[in-house]
Image (cartoon, rainbow, N blue to C red; front, side, top):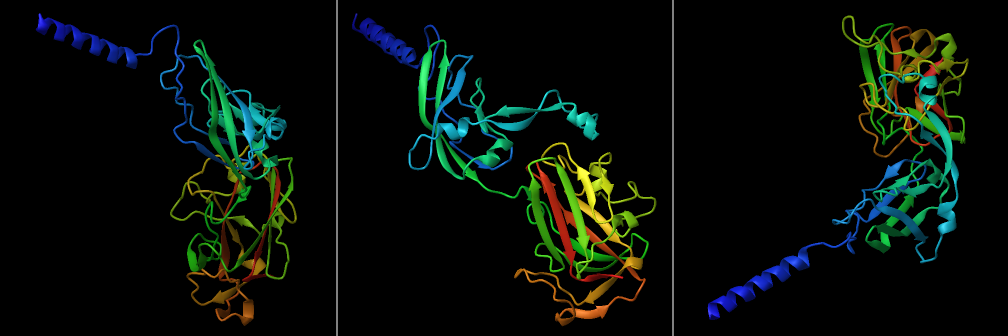
Length: 360
């Protein structure tokens, strides 16, 4: 009899244990809903998404919405985040193998007014869009409300949101590095490499964001005296690929990424781009654009070895300790590799001043 009572008692304990661990009844919503990572960092103007909400076994479908956002002092700043801005969105599935022209891509795009940060109502993913460009920098916290058939949970300070600035037009070091060298005139054969890497002493870069619209890149290249080279007159040309019968015959350049919108003027290379980031994918050599300046238009300084430039010094021409005169006229073309990737929509001008080349 005593043994029977022990068995019955043990059975009751086991039943109670498993009952406590079992979510039953008409629906369940967990009090432990959370994100795998409770901070999202947003660079203004860029598209960013968080992890989805960990439901901890809660019944679906869920209805998720943010209720309040607070600044670092604890003040509610909902009005800032509820304001709507024009944001480009997709209206159909994008296929990079089919949608290769500006017109084909834009046919699947439209502008929608929406808040800069939205929460996916089904899975809680926090999604930032280019409208964040207009948000004030700082650290914020967000409250969520999650509902399902079993009830509602208020999730206080569930996510920290850090909004920071970043480059809207990336070159070096984020995307690559400028490379300056020489090619035997009218060939793909490399001559002396003058500098390859960050803090290139021969390149003075100026990036100007001209406007929010349209999406356009204007690239100007000038010599050390400020004379602007003329792409229309072939003073800036595609750089040949090396090898016998190479395919493709030229290294990638701006024209390859936007062949139907690329155009040249007397002073610039210009192209309209449909979406960011642009380029959306590399053609094989990172996000670098390759060019040559033909020898008949320029004079190139010869310099001693300058393998690194951690101090970020600029080449000073004839007064520089690296100066060795100029290369023999007609011997070398000038090779230029420029890294670039646009992260935020808008109109940009990239101006490059080459400190070791003079226009004839």
